[in-house]
Each structure stands twice: as C-alpha cells, then as structure tokens.
Image (cartoon, rainbow, N blue to C red; front, side):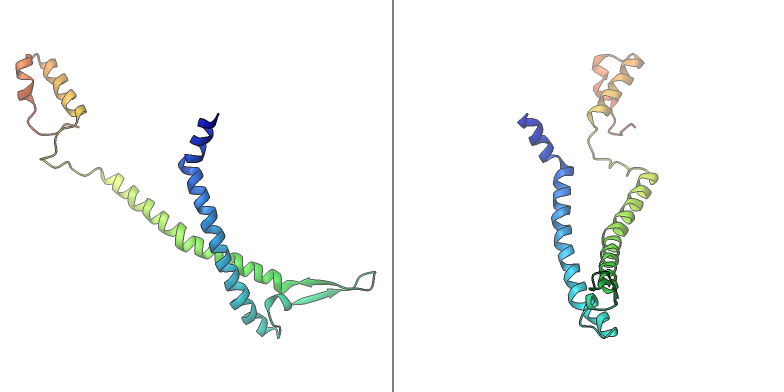
Length: 153
C-alpha cells in the first residue's frame, strides 16, 4: 500500500504539478500586487477615485432603505488581472513550447543525424550482421570478418 503511494508521489507528473502550483501561486501574488498597486490607482484616477475598486460604483435602491452597490470597477480590475496572467502565460510559456515542438518536429521529419564512422556498432547491429552472415552460410570463423565498421539500419 505504501509502495503504491510512494510511486504516485514520485511520479514526474505529480512533482511537476506541485511545482506549477507553487510557481503559479507566487506569480499570482505578483500580478495581484501589480494590478492592485499600479493599474487600479492609475485607472481609478481617470474616474476620480482612489482605486479602481472605488470607481464605477452604481447604487441600486433596496426595500430596506440601504442601497446595494454594484462595483463595476472591481470587476474591471479582476478582468485586467486575468488578461495580464493570460498574456504572460501565453507569451512566456505557450509560445516558446509551441516553437520548441515545431523545431523538434522539423528535425524529426528531416530524419536522424548520420552516425559517425568511428562510432562502435550497437548490439542490435552486431546481431543483424551475425544473422546475415549465418543466412549466407558462412562459418563461425568468418563471423568476425563480416563487420566492416559501417552501420546497417
């Protein structure tokens, strides 16, 4: 039971997700501070308010006598915050990852790099050479002489 839990925790996706949540939380704090301390006061000044939260307030009368305030400025601030986060995620994460995928796909289409002449053959290549020599009917003494250093696919 603990082995499965340990495997679950150490699986790459869980660790990556945990890192993403921590970084996302820190990033959200930065964006919230930027919107609250820079954009809200700047846009609020356009509406003669100290912050965007105090701008664009519409009071609706109620039956009890106290009015209900609709704070459209606060909604505009939240929308601004969302747009900033979305723009940063797109330009910092999505675009570079898409570019890397396109580059990797282009390399894959071009084929793999040619193998250098001094690279030793792999086990699979040696086994293929042995199979081919046996198929040709050569004896065990001729097996070593059949490999000329060139790799077969």
